[in-house]
Image (cartoon, rainbow, N blue to C red; front, side, top):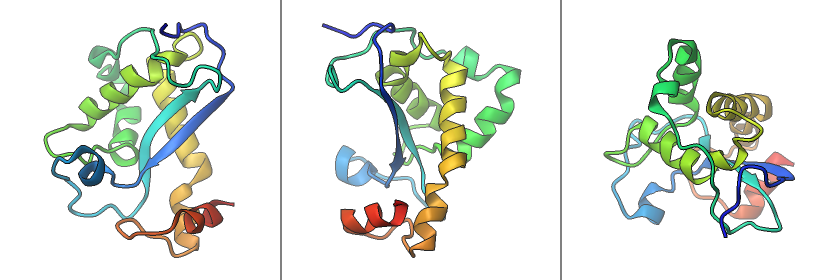
Length: 152
């Protein structure tokens, strides 16, 4: 049974895009030049009771994303929430992530607020700075425990 947008969520999870495109999707990667910062992969509302149920809610709207009032948000997302899969635009990636995860929170956040919240969390927690302070750089391999230590 799908989750409706009124389901209570106890945690927002922000994941960073650790250049998963080649290993997970099997598609080519579009990562040149290699980014010097870690970027957002998604903002996933989590409900630990019903974690694996699909969400229902309003679908992603390109019209909303392209509104003039969202120019600054789009510009920031072009840097912070990039698609690394060849042939998939950033807008395509945002649409996929929103339709898969973001619409779970449409009772609390509009589409614009959802993406603005992801941008705010990215700026607030500065994972790219935390990692770089521990010499963890994009494009290299690390043990999970090393990544975990970098952000503690």
